[in-house]
Image (tube, rainbow, N blue to C red):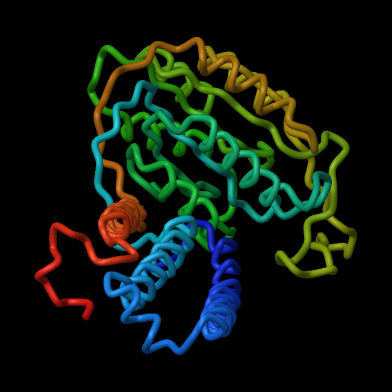
Length: 340
């Protein structure tokens, strides 16, 4: 893979033909001025140490330096860079409800999309943490096991939709139990879960599961998304038609705040309702910052490695070479006829 980190500097290449044209024009003008003093052959005999070829070479060296400088400013990048990164964070399991009710649009653009936006921001803020990702509806599945590669977590998060879990419902207890098993056995680092859900169609035992998690030192935080007043549920993500009951009435999906608060209290965590602002993010971040972190080392992979130092060294060598070339023959090398 190859790319330029700052490709806008490549527009400077437009100046190269202008520079060449200017140099040619200056040489023509210089020759015309010299001809006023006499013929070129006679003047060469009068100035035997003058070497026009040296002058030409010096120009093309400067031209090459200018060209390499443009490419250096554009930051060429290719190859893969691997480095060891020191991190200091917690272990964090994120569980997201993907039931059909999460398609309701009482938050913009809809509950699921807003949840994914918020969780992406959380992952960005918690880049030093180790993160696992769980999806749940009527069942719960590990979408991504515990890892320090937060960019992969964002990639997995972007692919989440209700089709990942065909069984409908809101199995919060299963998500909590699966999350507990996703943590490591480390004792010197705090552990926390974030569950984002509307709590609707809640299946039992979630409060008991949260208590058991808290007894193991795992804090359960609930982000409730939606409105208590309720909102119609689209048939699918792009549909303008809504689900109806047996009598043909439009079904409203309501945020079950009470069960969300009870689960958070049992898990010794916090409950925050998610709206279209960043309030929930700030509150949750403040709470997670209180937890005990652990130093760890991880390998960081970058798809692109900076290669501008190669161009910098080439420019330096060429500039030194250009300085060593005199416009006239160097007395130290007068017997060398390289530029005769």
